[in-house]
Amino acid sequence: GAGVSQSPSNKVTEKGKDVELRCDPISGHTALYWYRQSLGQGLEFLIYFQGNSAPDKSGLPSDRFSAERTGGSVSTLTIQRTQQEDSAVYLCASSPLESYGYTFGSGTRLTVV
Amino acid sequence: AQSVAQPEDQVNVAEGNPLTVKCTYSVSGNPYLFWYVQYPNRGLQFLLKYITGDNLVKGSYGFEAEFNKSQTSFHLKKPSALVSDSALYFCAVGFQKLVFGTGTRLLVSP
Image (cartoon, rainbow over all chains, first blue to last red; front, top):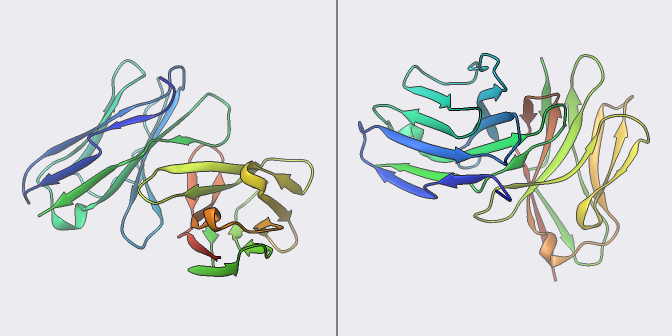
């Protein structure tokens, strides 16, 4: 596609429920990143996929968070047993191999009530 | 470890005046530096990057940034601000995985 697509754009969920956030990167981009942006804070790195290499999961805040990338394209970020502190905007970005700088999607605003 | 500091939470400037949004960094080796802008309810948009070469980097929308190795700074500048430049600006450092600053809100008044 022309840009990075994220869905849903908004998600309201009850505390304790599981949620799945989807990211569809730009076609041909080998790298895919997930960041979290909380109110009044900067971007917090979550996870990074690069081609067929093992993902860099060093930013995932707890074992309730997981992500996968199928076929080197679409990625899903899953948050299990959501907590109120998970409320944030989840941003996905992609980049081509050996290119510096990302293209971001518009994000998914997650609200846990 | 890499880190970025944006010392100002908000910068206020009148339309037509020059603007500067500050960024300092800490990184071992040669830094790859970036500026992104976020408009309300939108994702981040790439403005410019420094990889190597000329210390003055020109980017989108008339913005430029000056890489200063001795001061470990990468300040964003524009000679004449527009009201439409009002947004949240992020500085970032990294190679593949970027570390972002906390952002600076730029408010340009008419």
